[in-house]
Image (cartoon, rainbow, N blue to C red; front, top):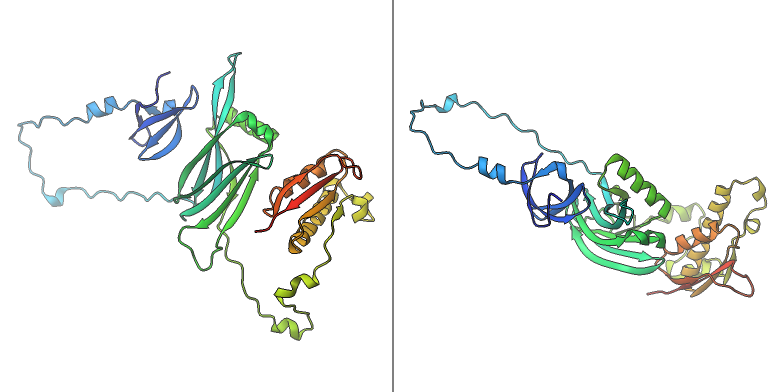
Length: 342
């Protein structure tokens, strides 16, 4: 290996000096320049010793040099400004490769970075889970057009459905911008394996997912209702909103024949969309009534509906946990959801 951790290096295209902080694989290393870490290919860097040697000051010659007057000095051409284009906030994964027993290159770990490619400094709360169980949490800040190293996960753990939840807020609050913004990402093993293969073919260092493109504006807190009342619409006191909600249910059945009479003419996508919309509606009603338990009947089938239901439940902060186990009434075709309220 040409480089070792701690070696001084020179970035060839920018002529900046830094250090090697980690060996990623036989083609890439992680380098640090002025406190910023990023991956680099080994053919993009070199040792800085030749540059240092050639930059040593030469002994001035005693040969007379003709005087140069100020009006003879050519004006320096203005250098174009480097314009940084905002493309949003990303969650970026850097695979670290190693050789297995058969001398094949395989991914050992995924190094996770938060990339703020916007002009706004952000505060963030980051949480990572496996199968709904918390694995790592972090509260910190990230500057504009910077990346922030979060942590590593073993590549084998991609099979455990890793989920990522990030709550953002502006470091300098703005009146027209939301107080905070939540976003989430769930990795699907097949997609990750495809991205890694594509990454190796294209010789790319990372693969990334967009968390959001633009920080959202603040929702309107007040809406004038007098005009609606004049048109005959009913307006209720928000404090008595529960009186006008549909009654809560302890059991909901998402079998398609229970939801649509003409389901035989619907596509699989249309049926699944209708079922998930019905689930979301009754979860909202359950939360509005501060109900602590709900049974969701989804059947067994191929397991697609159950999987989508569980993915949705993981995104609801009011859901404490849920269980899909054998029940004498529903077999394995139902999930019991438990809620908590703060």
